[in-house]
Image (tube, rainbow, N blue to C red; front, side):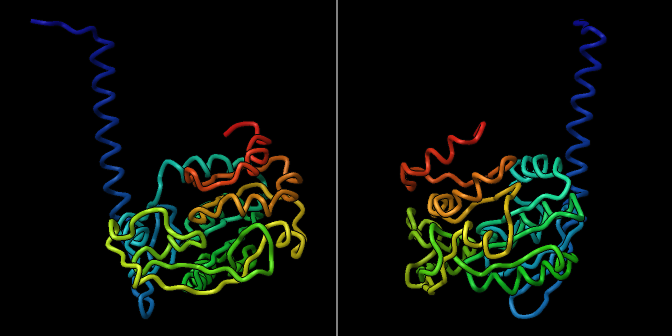
Length: 263
């Protein structure tokens, strides 16, 4: 008969118990979150893990199913961003490429003094973002900006919008074969959107510095940074959570990224 040290047995039991409790918590959380109702046309209002409510387009198959059924998206990244924002007393938050507004919404709850700016180029997302803002009581401390955030303001930008992946609209085209995602080029909508830079936006609304940027614009992230150099320089405590696309950025953005203490 093999005897294990008492401390080792205790450790094994604790690990197993913790793992099982995590599973139970996950199921309980999913059951709590899986509450939603149809709000007309293709709009679904669904409860997420924070207890907040978010408006989504049920035709979307990339993000909407996860929010409707699980109330969660990109859990590890979400927790990391929350840890950064929760340290701030009254953070200024930019959700650039907001999609349904997941990051701006979840990060808004840590301080009643926070302000959230949702930037989204896809026109079909704008009414959804307004619904999310209103139902969560954020109307007095948030803005929804319809426009393609890029390196300069005033230019018209061509936006390509896949039919089933609403949040993957891009001003840079697609670097993947859409057929692999059951999308056809013939089903991609094209619209013209006004371009805006973050420097110009901040100047127009009187923002001198910001605390957090979530940046995900399907390959246009470099242009966004090039149009935000003044704002970044003025924001000493700024943190950026940015999608990284290989071989899609100019070398000119490297000095901007190197200015940060860590990546």
